Amino acid sequence: MAAEIGTGMVAIAAGLAIGLTGLASGLAERDVGAAAVGAITEDATLFGKTMVLMVLPETIVIFGLVVAILMIFVM
Amino acid sequence: MFGRFGKKKGNYAYTVARVKAKKSHLFKDDAYSKMLLMSLPEISRFISESGYSEEITELTGKFEGIDLIEHATYRNMAGYFKGILDVSTGELHDMLAAVLQRWDVWNLKVILRGKSFGIDPDSVREDLVPAGELALQELEKMIALETVGEVIDAYCKLTETVIPPEIMDAYKTDGVLTDIEDFLDKEYYRRLLESIDPSSKPTRLLQDYIRNEIDVVNLETLLKLKVEGVVGEQAMRFVIPNGKEIDRKTAERIAAAATVEEAMGAMSKLSFYGDIKDALADTGSLTELVSVLKKVHISQARTFSHLHPLSIIPIIDFMIHKEIEVNNIRTVARGLASGLDRDVIKDLLVVV
Image 1 (spheres, one colour):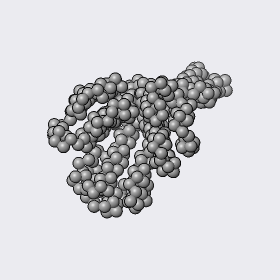
Image 2: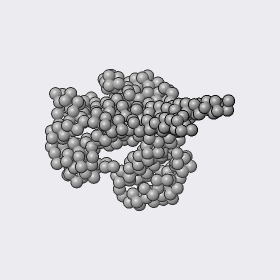
Image 3: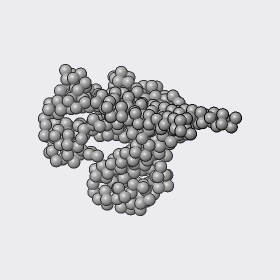
Image 4: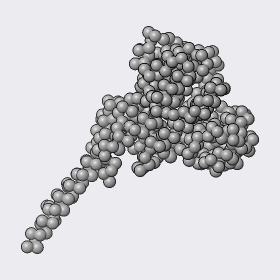
């Protein structure tokens, strides 16, 4: 019984790790994306640089994913 | 937390990014040195290759020489400002619209001075910047009117402004526009400050910035008047209320001093006193003092824009730099057209 509760808690924690970091990535990308589109509108050559900046907030959710995987498979 | 994400708040990130990209295309200092070595047609070609192509192409058939440059530069600036206003949304759009109303006041002053001194309509058109609430067609209608009184009536109707009868009576008696122009400036700042809702950080920053601008404008006015020998209550009439550091008491102390040196004591507590101290000591040169105050104003915009990148201030900072660029091009063109010495023209340029 206790083990089952423990497994459930780990699943909830993994879900929260993915969900909350996903939300944070979304919020960060909102401003970065808007700014990137604005910059590209003025100067199309900035596409490459803005693409890199767009990807940076993605790392937040990737960290969340790593933590979730660790929780599920290691703990 | 989600307050700033509402549609009402405006698209700060998008607009500021566009403005920053635009700012990177503005002329660098060495461009003016190159222009000083050119003839007027060469300047027209040079600016048409550097962002003014649309206006130069459009106006080439109608104008040439200095007229072409003057029309193209102000039209280009108005286009930039209108473009920024068009892409902004929410409270950012509202604040920008309120800030851009200064061009309505500018245009009205240009038309009034034109009517008052009997300047021909084409020369008046050269100095119009249709970046405010009033479109070019409405300004054209105002130019076509006969008298100063009719122009003021038309403006008041379009912008819902009420000019106190005593100011109009004073104009009718002495025919001097100073009081009307002074009222228009005060009304612009009153409306602008009233339109800002200081509930968020970006709007509070704008409020602070505008109040700092009022300080710089007031100080410039008081010092100019002092050099002309106008002091005390007579000078206080021109002070715009709601400054940040220069309140009524400080303004009265500065206005009461007979000379600029005497006023230095009253100014010593101002945060930008260090920047203007040297220019104040050199009281013989009002041009230098005005130029230093302008630089203080520009550096305030720059500091504010770094303090809060996602606010209206980086946009105002760009607008100031664009205006400087346009004024510098016009100064070079006018200077060369009137045969001024290149070193004299260079001294008249504002380089930041």
